[in-house]
Length: 64
Image 1 (spheres, rainbow, N blue to C red):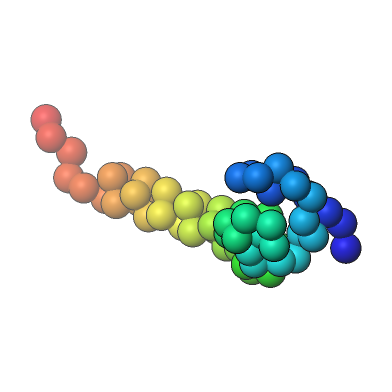
Image 2: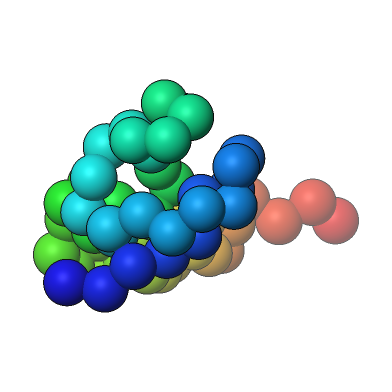
């Protein structure tokens, strides 16, 4: 476990706490809040939406 600086009071706090024990502010460095693979799923979603838009644009009738 490492320590980080609180964004609000600047004192050193553990990186796995929800609130700063000194000032009570929410910690923005929690590792627990992130899900594994969220970045990969986001990229796959963007790729799928882009592919859908491309196919839909090619499928639309051409205006002459």
